[in-house]
Length: 393
Ligand code: FEO
Image (tube, rainbow, N blue to C red; front, side, top):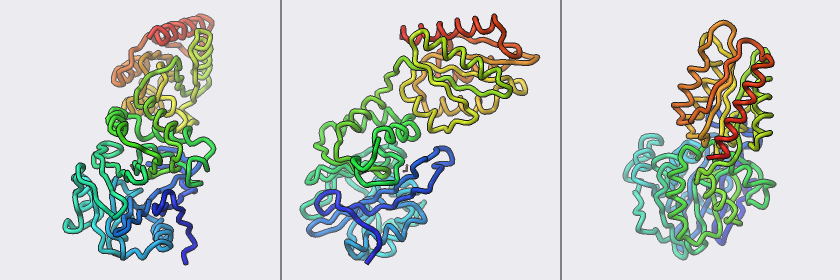
């Protein structure tokens, strides 16, 4: 008998995924203080059995161990691939080799299954989004969910159990527990995950939420983090996060070499607060991307504070602004504070970077060396101007 537990999340629907509590970096970018999980689910109908997604490479034994508690793998009828990314699809070849299951996936998913995992086309069936698959007492309905988080992604919904298998959508990087009630702050974890993965795709998220509006959902079973038995909070928060509405908040992203720009960041932070805007101060040199990215969901303002390095922005500031642009961060209004020793030029590059990220710049201050009294006053004024713009909308 397998040492792995396979909890039932609804009648004859079981959790068979894998836990990865030791992973500390995802996509070589995202810090994971709590590791992650690769969730997979086994659905036993009266006549047929289906597996929904698989696990990452290296976790096959745990995964197959959980399945073996419930069924003989070679009795599997269907393997549903909601998403082709390696963290959920790496064990597909193992399952296909061990069974005669048919792989059910979207049209784009079929091409990826062939190309990425070597699945022969005769073993793949492209789903019809209008035509459910009957397992006997349980029907698999497929919902096109393109770009959540790749173009091939789809959701699977079982109306008899009111379960939505949502892939990465509604996910969270948490390795412990099975249900939302097992996790101290599931919405906090979901918000970080949303910022790191879904934020640039929020328009697609809105489309998917509109489709889900018509469904009766009692359980949301994503591919990372807890299974939600209380679905309203996560659905409502996703509506807010995908909506893109900003709050009177500003992120102050700074980097410093000798302390001057750090003092300037502190000055503008105080000015913003004094003028009614919540300021969040982050040193780009020692803050994880994950901590900063969560502020990109709903902060109205951005202040970039950087020294001049080799006639340009500090490289960390360049990388940060690239992320702001790629992730379609929420910032509407921006301000720039820079320091220089002998030649002004960082400000020009910062302006270009703000423009590329579609941020309206309300002003900039360039300081020669450490800030003096007149610089302090000027930076304070810039903070007030930015606060007025953020509050005035
Ligand atoms: Fe968790 Fe897009 O894979």
